[in-house]
Length: 368
Ligand code: SF4
View 1: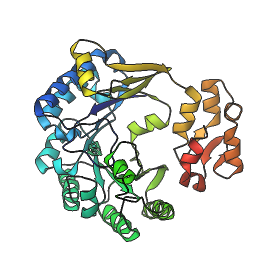
View 2: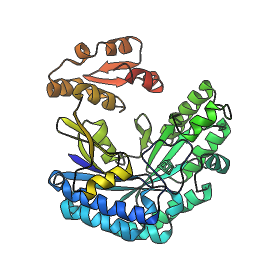
View 3: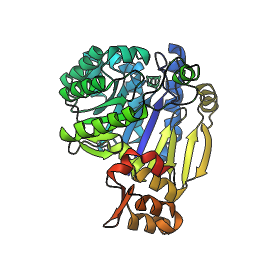
View 4: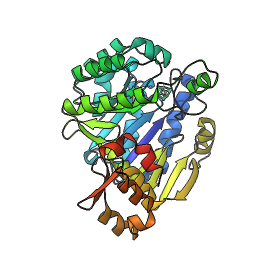
């Protein structure tokens, strides 16, 4: 199975914590980018025939109106038979999702929306420099439902600056009241050169206490699993049959192709990365060049372990050893230490994180 990831790098404003490939740009630059993106898709059309999942992410793809998104979907459907596509996800920001917009994107073949909610606390949203407020996010979910969307995923963050445990509990309550079929709940990660990073460097803010942050993660795990969600990946939870099929490709060592500035892909034994700068991306495509920054061999077994161990089910040692013709523990003896420390368990041929290992997943995965 193969997926297509499409990157739309523009945002209305920049969130304090964000280190994705994104920028604020004029409507004319956004239009120019869309043309380039469409052209890049035609350049890689030979790679697309077996694609079954499409994920349009950003940035903020919903900054484009339905007419522009229709142009994009049309080119995608020209090169991939819509009948073979089993999932098409569009990332949206709540402030863009009116009832009209929801109805329009539904007609384009989008069958899953991933909505960036992050928190229901207005003061925290303001600090993050998000443009929506709690009510906007709640309205957006209702609009999506009214438009007929059955598959809605909500993105949340815990461990936010100034977040208290009671704020987190309120977030979880409001989240569950909306009954999404999929939830991505990330811990705040402090990335270099973000606004948050500079505020912290200057001593203007303090990160949450580590114990409180860990308690929040535990609280999220407990509340969501008690509410009937399957905790299938470190940060992802799903109702039955509602896992993200596209993201599973990344975790299950499958192929995907990435188009757009900064997009990554993995085809066969090679990983490709597109030029991150929108300026140079446009220059390359407009001069009829594939906008690759680099194409490198995949680090096969290591990458498969790093991604696969994120899944609750873990990885099948037999499958990996057959595919990469290496013995996992011989190639990565440090994993045996993690087993001895109770961070990983090896049961019935599967290697997976224990409950404790999941809480300390960074520690386990950086051993690789
Ligand atoms: S909307 Fe998303 S991509 Fe854009 S700045 Fe905020 S977090 Fe980053």
